[in-house]
Length: 96
Image (cartoon, rainbow, N blue to C red):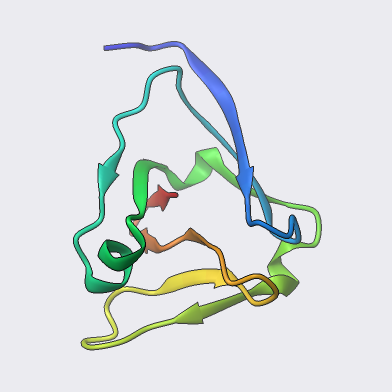
């Protein structure tokens, strides 16, 4: 297992939402099987929540979509609609 970590930066298409995450140099990404992510072919990796950071004033551009059982909370940019953080799960986060 690779114990070295690097900083990965990402965000939405219009760049209103930006994030940074510290993760291993090699991550295991997987496809989400919920109907929303499946239709958009979302790929994500999971990291401890304390390694994730929203940058600048990103929070003001976020909104959430939920459906069905309302278990999954899909967070996306309210300007361009790009999902960047589909789900928090306890102390971990799925990063798209």
